[in-house]
Length: 155
Image 1 (cartoon, helix red, strand yellow):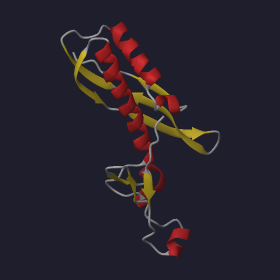
Image 2 (cartoon, one colour):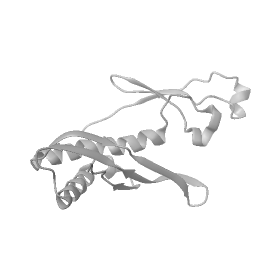
Image 3 (spheres, rainbow, N blue to C red):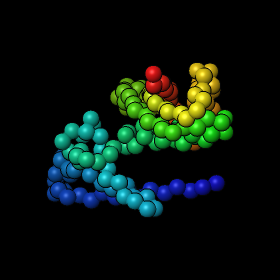
């Protein structure tokens, strides 16, 4: 078993009155053991109160799913005897209303483009590798969001 920690820190820079009116910056930091990431609320949610140049939770969520799938896929490909030389994923998450006014990231699509040295997997082998990676991805196993994979196969 492992424990993972992140420290989220935010400080009010506006007046208390502005805070009560919702007129306050959402810029904050997400700190991990060895680094700090500038973070914010989604500009789609808070508009001008989002911090430019910072990552929002929804982006981190999509990135975490993509990252976990990639790392698990690389392991599965290695075990199957394939040499992966490059992996690039342009992942996309969709947030929409559920149950009335509640919002959720309801779908994440992974679109990895993978380069191999030597023999490339067949379509069936590729599908099996992605399926195994998805089944073993810790993050995918932790969420109820539908996660699909649409690999971009170079010509």
